[in-house]
Image (cartoon, rainbow, N blue to C red):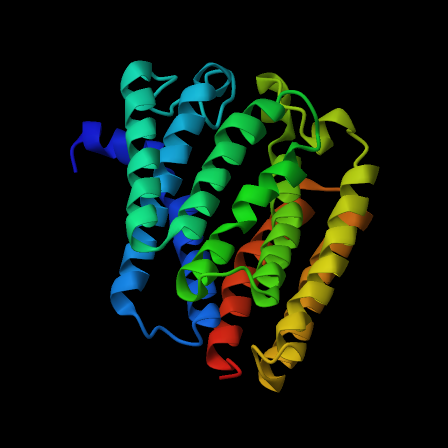
Length: 286
């Protein structure tokens, strides 16, 4: 891969795109009680991937100036001058619109609308709000929790209670995950002018309360699939164990208020979600 293409690839935030595709696939699998329409499944992934990558490119475009102020982002393609802003802007719009229209003609109007809504909330609402209010984390968790709903609607054509539960799980999970990141890089966020909670309240009290509150909610939300018949008892036990371990990581941060504890919480969040998803696939109730 040449340096130029590597820069374009970086603009799409491939790791975030991969997570989005995994959760969308998960929603399709649970909603359709298996993957019985492989072509539709592939179309979902293509359209969702295009829209997600385009949203990430537009996020890079809007934050190119502040990215240049922070150590961990100053070498990104736009602040480093390796990609022209106009090129990134065009690329982002083309990807988003291509993904939305592809979903419209393959996965249906509802799934396409959810993808467009997610892109709009992420780019137009969440991105500028990061410099205005610490509630940006909760607002940003909404588009982050929509992909499994889009997968569900692609398989079923409707937003059922199961899709709502998947949304709630992803919504709650993102809070400890991103609060941990904000804690670790709060000096960088301060330089960039981002109003992350650990920045606006340095003592960490509110951050820890938020982390613990959402971890408790996540534990509750995560067991609901078993009570709805989507998963079995093996998943239920596993979800409780994973939730308890995740909660312990949050407690450690609450007591120590250290960067090391925040890193452990971040690692716990990265392990928790794929393990929970794997449990649900292995012990699907159908």
